[in-house]
Amino acid sequence: MLLPSTMNDPLAKLKSLFQGGSLLWPVVGLTLLFGFNAVFSPSFFHLEVRDGHLYGTLVDILNQGSKVMLLAIGMTLIIATGGVDLSVGSLMAIAGAVAALMVTKISFAAAVALSLGLATVAGVCNGILIGYGGIQPIIATLILMVAGRGLAMLLTGGQIITFEHPAFVFIGNGHFLGLPFTVTIVLFVLCFTLLATRKTAIGLFLESVGDNEKAARFCGINASLVKVMVYAYSGLCAGVAGLIATSNIKAADSSRVGEFMELDAIFAVVVGGTPLTGGRFSLVGSVIGALLIQTLTVTMYNLGVEPSVAPVPKAIVIVAVCLMQSGRFRTHMLSFFGKRRVAT
Image (cartoon, rainbow, N blue to C red; front, side, top):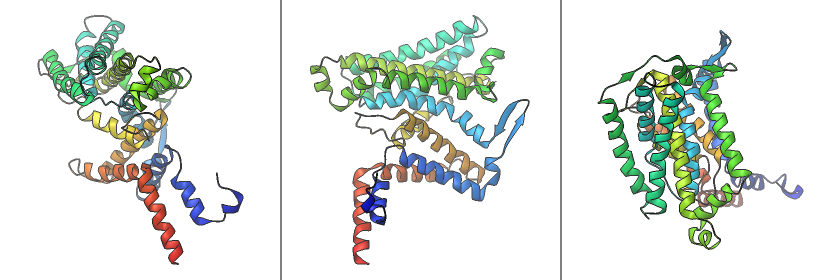
């Protein structure tokens, strides 16, 4: 907040803006994207109601971005502890393959529980290797990233498994209160995670382990158990995202489901203001980061940008937002503007 004596000072206002919170820059980036679409693609904001359900590009962004949002929620907790999870895309494929194979053989609830249980157990394995085995997170999760994709292919025999099950199809294609059911899932997971991390000591444990693991251990925190818990939760989030992806296309495509989505999840977390060094995190920021990435993707497709070229402008926007998150970069920018002001 600016003091009265500096409210008319442009440099002071600029400094205040540059020193904004972690949510500032992803929100600014998202706002700029919306403004760009308002000028060059007016239909971007068109909404219509059909059969009591809301349709439009904005709704599609929420629906298609739900998978990255779920992955980003789990990834945020992992990165808060100073780790990273490269296996979430493969866990999506495993969960989708198991659900597609079992939903016609056992009850729907049992099939969902089994697929989510396997994804969670895989996350626990990651946590054990990292927390108790002392293996670097990038190595441990890279192992499961490769092996998990192979396991999903083995389960499906390398084939695309199709299914027709109303309850399963509803997960990725149904509606609740006029919006896609996937939005409800994301809101539930986000609210639950926020309550668990901000209304209990869990959030402090995560930040303590990420900030200084040795000091956390001296304070009596079981850092290894904390890591197992966050990787297990990330696995669960990946499992839910896998169910959505499989349900959405009514098939389990083990070679494509979750492909490269771990990178989008990491991008969303970093863009949302959670540092890769750990120690603090922003769940809401990660969700906004996921929305920014999905909005950027949809914007480029609407403009006719080839999918093979789309990663280039996507990377430019992500780098720009990350630079604005950097305190050192903002300091240099403030110094530059200050020198310009003195010169004039």
